[in-house]
Every structure is written in C-alpha cells, then in structure tokens.
Image 1 (tube, one colour):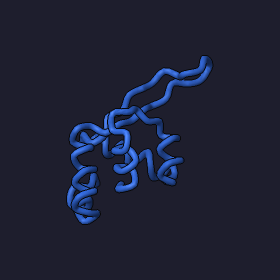
Image 2: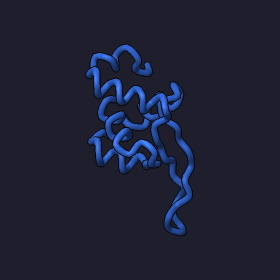
Image 3: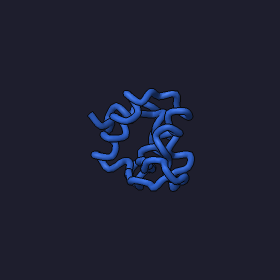
Image 4: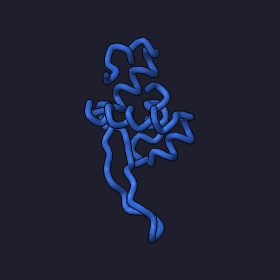
Amino acid sequence: MIALLNALAVRAQEWRHGYDIMKETGLFSGTLYPLLMRMTEHGLVEAEWREPAQPGRPARHAYRLTASGLELAQQVHREGASLVGKVSPA
C-alpha cells in the first residue's frame, strides 16, 4: 500500500491507469487491483472509466488519490510506515 500511495501522490491530480502504476511500483495485478478497490471503498482513491486515446481500444479505469488519500500519503511520508497499519483498508 505504501508503494501505491507514493506512486499516486507524486502526481496526485493526474488520472493514472493501472498498467502504468504496475510498471512504476512493480506491483502485480493480483496485488494492485484489490488494493485499488479497497482504497476506493475507503475513500482514499477515486476511479472512473476513461475513453481510449486510440480508436478501437477499450475504455479503461483510471485512478487518482482523493483529498483523504493524499493526506494519508503525506502522513505516511512524514511519520513512516507504522501509520499505515493503523489505517490500512482491510
């Protein structure tokens, strides 16, 4: 979760596709997407369908941190990983 928070916080206002996040963090899809879903359920991440940039490609989900998610990312950066265990989505 820390790697995901850090990756999303770098460009907090930018919508990011899961594949790009996987490449940046090294997380596998079986780890990344469940984390994104739980973080979305807890109001830390928002997700939306994005139309493809190229015709003929499927629509994809894009993700970005909410204000609460950015606040948590900043707290984790300041206070360290011990904070994540206290607020991590189960």
